[in-house]
Length: 326
Image (cartoon, rainbow, N blue to C red; front, side):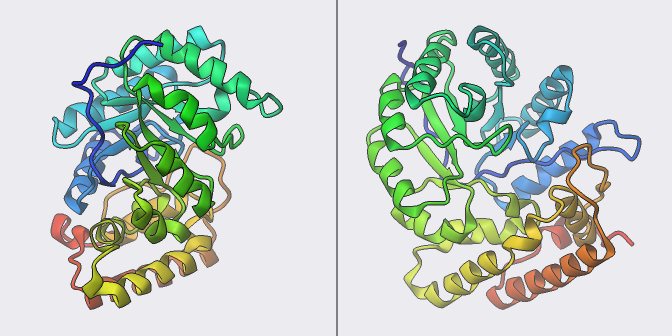
């Protein structure tokens, strides 16, 4: 395996949102809306951006749209924070390596590998490791990351698998969806000494993961209340704010169900209600945004406002946009 040059740095610690893709009501990608959304994440305090991911409806984008979406985010970000993006969409490893190179040419800091597309569900970890090493060898010195994406199936890569791949010095990001705090701790431990960051997606374990040494969070909740995700990344170990941290942690747990209902449509609805000009159009079939779901989302947003007011967290939406859409 080739090794990466020392110029490849770790990604910053903090919140790296899994970005949505705004669409026009016609179904076309809203590239101006994507630029505005990029600004919103940055204004909220994101440490980096994950473009062209499942939240972006990456499987519903054409090849050229995946490239254009990623390039748009990179160019609009203009170096303010690093951007990563998915670069594997199935097929032989050599084909996946070619698209990794195309995504990297957009200017991203690292290209993300979907774990469930390197080996079939019934294939062994040894097969996954062999193909991952092949992909690494075919992609020069491009920094890579892993995403335990639930589609086509969730393939977890445990600490033993990571230990086989980290010596390449090419793996700098991992979007963790194992939902297992003990395993998160093992993964962090085995990665000590490498330019590797684990970003947990499971908000039930968010505080505990950060305290265990996770680099940050990459969670869908950041598409509804990004200010609270940034706040927890900054305050998770603040001894003077323990009660507040516990309140926010409990809110994350209590809001899990609504956040995952008809997602990402519900996230677009919440952004719209908070004042961001985005259509709820979603290419991915995620179920209907029912009147009941909208009512539950409205209550969620009221609670978000209450928590932010109590903690003195300014709304990035009120700061950035004039007034909520009607």
